[in-house]
Length: 390
Figure 1: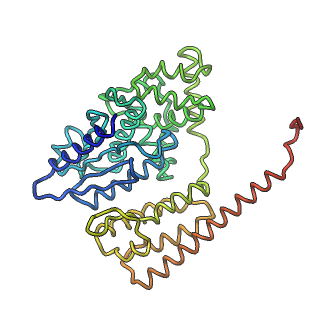
Figure 2: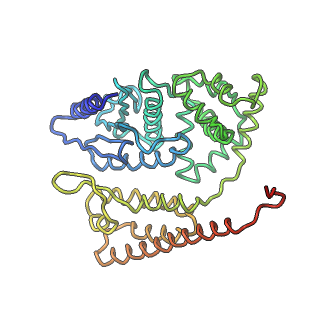
Figure 3: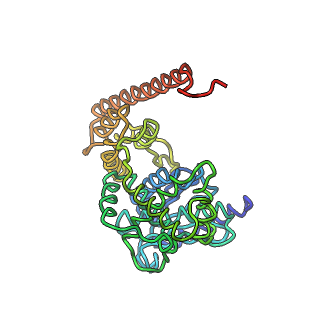
């Protein structure tokens, strides 16, 4: 697609956004990281909230989906003021001429689960456009959408993973053919939703240096037959439908029973905690998004938009702290105290921010020292027992 045509398509999207709202409304545009999601809404607090949720989803799904750092154009999310505009369901995803992907979502559509599914379908559609060049309307298999939404939920909230294990412990794995071919217009199947998460987990585990999972994902998003793609992308795993079923059922039980460490590593802890401590808000006459320090954000916590974002982050941090690497646990608790309820005086903000910054520096220094020590040990260690000197 040429640069001029891409610009024209984005301009059309922005003009369309203006037509979705009453004439006296003042829609706002809020973005996550560039080239990821852009949210249009009347309520700026809601728009910022969706942007934060969308960025969380990108972070948790970039590994399984092999997401790029950014797309050439973001997924456009439109929070609609009336349910009629959203269509028959709580949301719909359109792939417009040229490959522009938009998610139409009723502003009060309901639960976090609905929001996750809407963002996941938009993200998978945009990934398909990027991989296929946007020539045709992308195919997003229902099981894959459910799997990614479930993966997101169980990685964002550890208790959700425990709940999924308990729920599926009482079930037998559904047939893999029925799961792969689960029709979008079919009935809701809660047992399929849980099985989809284990299938996603299993297929990633089975993928090796040959890149079986990325190849399978590309074929799925290009509209290929799922069962044929599975056989082609995972050669040597099974021969015939009976062997394929045994392979899948063994993988189901392994994925469901495997123990997941309750602590994330230091690198991921630093990334997630750092993201919660960084604020981006529109400031000045031009309403340009700029990075705002933690001190400045707390000083403005009396403003509704800032207060809502601080509260949201405090809730997310409360879920994250038990899983933080020990290096970053103190910094997490210090940040939680800074984001705690109530507007704080300037002197109190300074004390809380200084405590977080001190614990953050200590954590980074510990991580760097540990990494250097391990590197030095690896350089000085001899070859493993039984290794050939040649």
